[in-house]
Length: 60
Image (cartoon, rainbow, N blue to C red; front, top):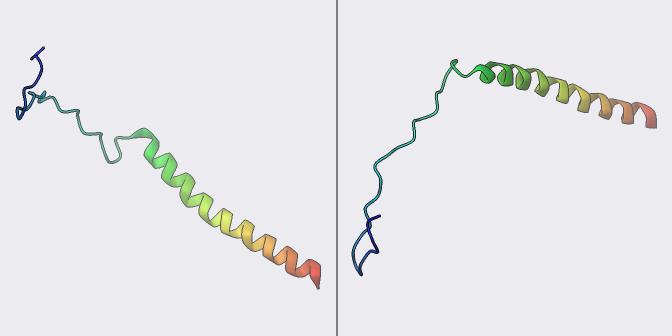
């Protein structure tokens, strides 16, 4: 297209820039993922607490 670059010369580059991804509530999956994480963290902590309680109660 532009030919080989000589020693010490830069090759011309395109100025095209990809559009920035949309942020905020316009993304349809963002709210669902946030809700799932908010519900999953306490559920995971409760499960771990239940396992610890089970092991302690089982051994006594």
